[in-house]
Structures are given as C-alpha cells and as structure tokens.
Image (cartoon, rainbow, N blue to C red; front, side, top):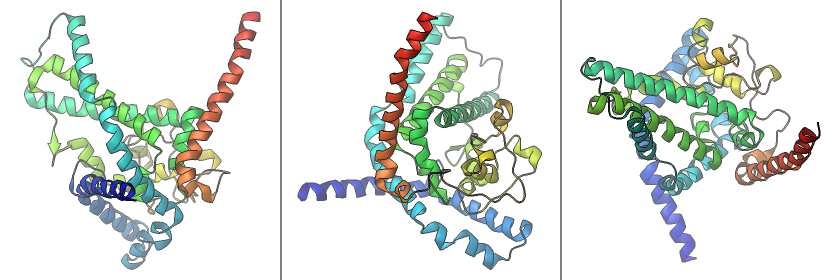
Length: 337
C-alpha cells in the first residue's frame, strides 16, 4: 500500500513540476498566451466571418459536449500518463547534443578543419539564417514522419491512437501512443543536432537563435497565430492560395476527417507547401461537414486505456508477424523466377 502511495505521490510531483510550468512557458504549445490568442482569433472568426454573436460563439467554443466527452477525457488521461512516461524515458533517448557532436566531428574530418565564414556575413544574417533553416528542416522532418506514420502499417498501429479522437480540443495534440512520442523525440534530436552542428561548423560561436520570450521567432509566430486551433471546435479557413503554403486549422480538421476523399491528406504541421510539393494537399471548402475518428472503427474501446495503450502494441505485433510470414515466400519466388 505504501509503495502504491509513493508511486502516486511521485507521479503527481512529476506532473506538477513539468506540466503546470508549461502553461507559463512560451516554448510550450499550451502556454497561456497562445491559448488566449487562439481564443481571441476563434471569437473574431465566429463573430465577423461566420456572423455569430459573441454569446453563441462562446457557447460553441466551450461546448461541454466537446470538452467533457469520452474522447476529450481520454485526451486528458493520455496527456497525464505520457508526461510521466516521457519524463522517465527522455534521459535514455537520443540527445541533440550527441547528434551535434557526431555530425560536427564528421564534418571536421570531411573538411579537414573548420571553415569559418563569419568574416563575410553579419551576425544578424547568421542568426536569421539559422533560425529559418532550423524551422524549415524541423517542419520538413515533421511532414515526413507524419506521412510515414500513416503509410507504414506498423507505425499506423500506434498513430491511430491520435486519430481515434472523435472531437478535437487543444490537448488532443498530446493524444499519442508512447511509441510515437519516442519517435518524435528522436526526430527532434536529429533535426536540432544536425542543424546546430552544421551552422557551428561553418559559422562558429556567432550562431544564435532569433527568439521572442525564449522561443524561436517562427515557432512563437506559429503558436501565437492559432496553432491550438488545429485541434479545436472552431474550423478556421484561409484563402485557398495561402493554404498552399500555410496549414490552416480547417486543413488539419480535414486531415482528421473520416471522409474517404480526406484520407492521407494534409500531413504538414506549420507549412502545407510540403503537401503541395509531394501531392498530399487538400484545400478546405466553405461547407465542409466533417466527422472525426477512425473510419469504420468507431468503438468505445478507442477511449479506454486498453484501447489507447495495449491494443496498438497487439496490432503492431500482428502486422510484424504477417510481414515476416510472407517474407520467405517472396524470397523463394524471387530466386525461382
């Protein structure tokens, strides 16, 4: 009994130390300033574009059927559990410092020295270039990891946890299986490590990030301009030509839609230009009526801890076994052809 109480007490302490400060940290997506800006944008959209009065707009935004639904309650549970799991796992995962060291050392061997270029470029140019490069590389990597999570069956077994949400709220972004969370952590370490090593190799200690309140200027702008609306009850569209470059909240809603024509569309996070280039772009329409969840798989189990944590592992194992059960036949056919 005392052991169980100690575990619960430690879990609460971890949550308080990690998540509560996140509401006051501009580097986190759920920073109170970003949540407030998203609320203001949503109210203005509903009032002046949709022509809905403020009272009805507030009712739509804070609809109890959304925020207290089984789907939303599952989001909150996953957020809490994953926070504790990642706090335990993070020190054991790939670190960006390790990646940066390995890349930097490899570049040093490859170029037989460190070619500084700071003499020809002012520091603000280096800072802006590094900030822009890191943002673009990060978003590009997010696009491809997200696409693979949909296209690779064993990865989809885990990513479908996120898509099992039948309503969207800002905390739905944290509704992910721990395996997916680990993949995103590794992706982040690789991107930041590679970008940092490359710029420090070429520009030395003059490399800095352009930041606002401790966050990259591009990340700050993305979050301030309504990143939390991508998972929300409010479907905000952009001008279609702009949606070819920037991912609107409505486009991400389409990504969550169960409609056949929306499946495997709009993988981008901040930018939709990757979808445009690689053929997965879907522009929003004024009268889109969307339903969220898993097409053909609506089940109460998707909101249970078993459905969120254990079933994906079982399904991934099934995919693994089916793949290798076919492998010897394929090899035999190849050699006998």
